Length: 407
Image 1 (cartoon, rainbow, N blue to C red):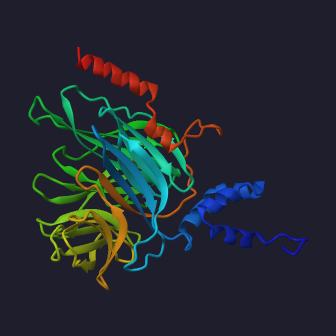
Image 2 (image 1 turned 90 degrees about the vertical axis):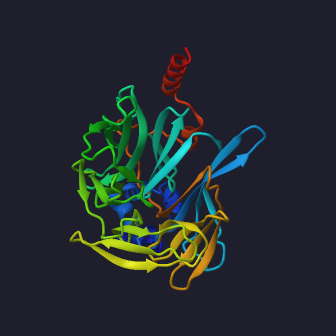
Image 3 (image 1 turned 135 degrees about the vertical axis):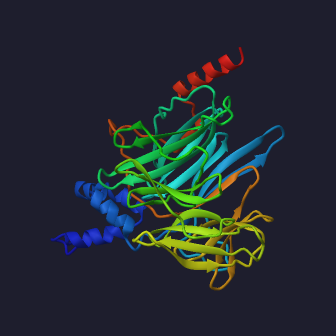
């Protein structure tokens, strides 16, 4: 400023767009104009896609410690730097640490910087929440209205976190597969519900795929242009792709690339497109992976083939620069592999692969708010409170079930 005139508006916006979320949250207090600007949907979208907001690896590591009479679990969310020097273990920034936790189940995402987290309550009820690590905003979801017959057993479930481009609404689709134990599988069922963050409510859906098929969670949240994708494998071991449109709330189906039937596969995003990673994982030195990308016309094109010269392993993710992240089975390490140089970089994580879990995400910071219907300014939730407290309605449900099962 020259002492009399403020900086031009477009220059102010350009400067703010280059800043990290942490700084922008502080700068909301500068003046009412900046507050409104930083909270505006157009600024939030421009900031998320700005070239300075680069994707980084975010690792959720479920750790296990053995005590005298029990096993104690903890969850740590760690962010790695944008630039990782080959051969040098990078410094980790802890975003969230949940020590001595018992009911953390999994995490899915990210979509526009948001994650879906899940916990179980005494192995009976499932609770979900939406979380923005950059703003630390968190919202727990109400219970889903699944009404299941007593003779059904919970066999499998999958989530999809997505964004409705028309209504600017974050949605969660939850698919659950139940087996008919009494009928020995004759009446297996698939149920589904979708949650709207704007309405803060669920509604029932009618999925149109057989209960005998198995949906696989992708490496990253495969939500593209308002459509979420899962890889589906039938009893005949043939892959297809199931989809869910967040706008029309309709399920769909599409074909996978032409790959050998014995190959393993998983979905992810690569270069802004839906991608499928296929191969024969686990074999030391000899595993070969292909990366297929779906073009706009719906056809698949193989864009990369990788043969990592490393010990027995399992793929965890692939980056836009074609580097891959593997877990090493024998040493429980998490490493980054560069197919061009064959350089292996230890990322500095020790994994408990047998009784715990690890998730690796391509993550970009976001200012995206988690909208919820009938929300007042004073309503604030913390993710720590979600995992360390038992809501009274959940306690009453569990207490009733425990009493009935033991009397």
